[in-house]
Image (cartoon, rainbow, N blue to C red; front, side, top):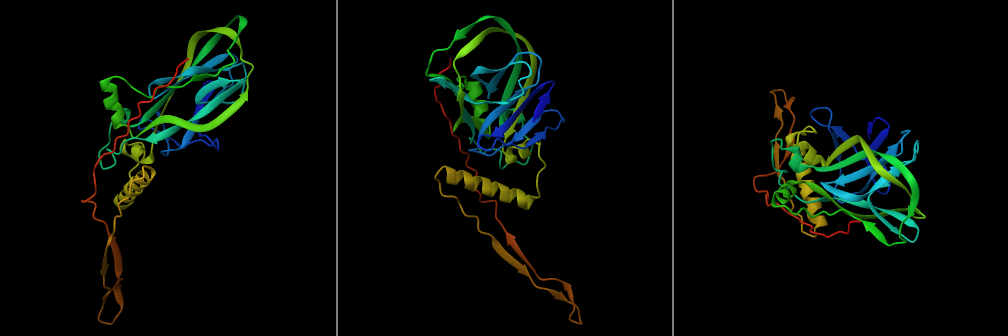
Length: 286
């Protein structure tokens, strides 16, 4: 959870509403969220301000296409995702973390986090109330973010990332008569930036410490194995070589060094082939 002034922003699991684990960056200021591929999530926001305010969401550089408003001292949290409206129902559909690349898993050096992690930006604005109300159409209407980045430079940056955001399936719906008070945007009050990535990605950019070499190798194998299973690809089995040493005894038969058994893994023959998954979906903006 990140709190600034009277506002709170955090990423939560779409089903349980539990917060994902957060970490501070190397500067002790930036917020990084540890996520899992294929996990669905909402952007949870809350306000305890005396002002009427609106939250605007930008995910991986793309606007979600709507704002979430709070009346003064409206403390009940709201959940941001893919918004839609139909037949007097306002529906938020979850977002989902999707793994798209593994290039940094074999790297032992720290990488530029701006090219590796995803980013969610939430900006809070003061609302200026105007006279009158307007009525939305009965629908259906949708506001969905566009995950396609058109420029070559942006696409190159996108290919380096460990995870990105795509559409989820979990829905939160509530009654909504479609009546909206007229208002215009006032001054910017706060900006939140949450960077997200897998645990391996956060290790790669220096946010999390690296485990011992053996544990690091096991993490990589597990991560790649899970990825292959989710993409219907056979996971390669890494078989250990079993080595053992005999006990060393002194002249009286007392044990000086215990017998030991080792499992040795040959990581030099690992397949370093990178996987790239691009989604060029087209979404409707309102």
